[in-house]
Length: 68
Image (cartoon, rainbow, N blue to C red; front, side):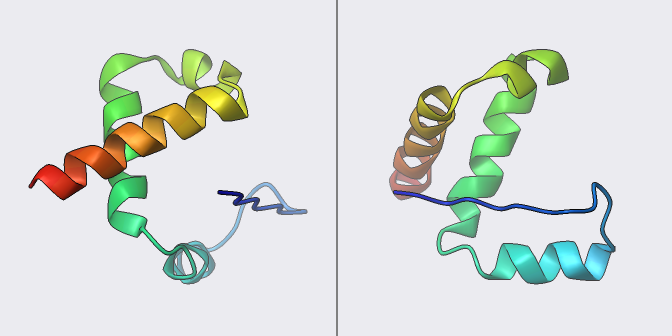
């Protein structure tokens, strides 16, 4: 799975942010992944995670969503 979002400007409007999220296929798992990360790690720790670690969190979130 490859998902890459590049933004030239660091800030964007809320409506643009929501529109971009609507393009994501499994947004429920994405939100669950964010909730899991925020409950377990600091913002600095989250920002230091590499793609492989993030993918593991996302896959764990997908499994959690499927169990509901």
